[in-house]
Length: 256
Image (cartoon, rainbow, N blue to C red; front, top):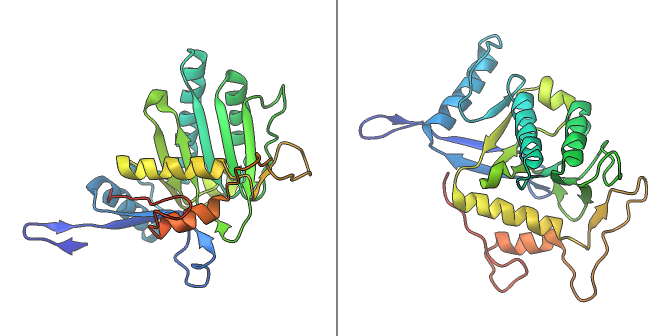
């Protein structure tokens, strides 16, 4: 925290991975820095949890495991299912390292069967079977393995037309949702929300390093239309360096 003219002001950084100098040039993550009092209070509660014999805490904005994250994500998915059943637009676009939790997988299957469009970018282990006409209609999954190790977690829900966007330290794994201290942060800044939406859309359009997970064991590359090759990591690399003349153009963000 920092003391201002009238009161002490807190600042927090919330990210999707470790601050590790050994992996900083290889891993790709999301993170944001904020002075919002509700975020600061939630993070303070997490640190108090660590030093206060794991005393249960409440969170206003963050979805924090092991208490609130699973229930929070389950409600977000159930809300999309309810919207689809009402005939409203409904989708779940998620990016994570690993998808192995059986309860989350069953809920995604339920969403797909209800008409929710599910797009998944899963770098590593994925125990969900996408594209099965009976089990998982409306679900597609890809994996991107390229120069940098994809380590960021991003979850986007339609929210009835008002997207709900989260970055998260946790994958949809049982150990992350139930057995570890993890945090998922809602993104409220419109500028940052747009940047993250553009990020997901660009990665979803990758047809150079993306592999289609719908055929078990095949790991075939996503087909590349003639004359249009999209290598998402290269485009994002130039975008992060604010080079408008390079693939991906420039991006901007603001403090949340």
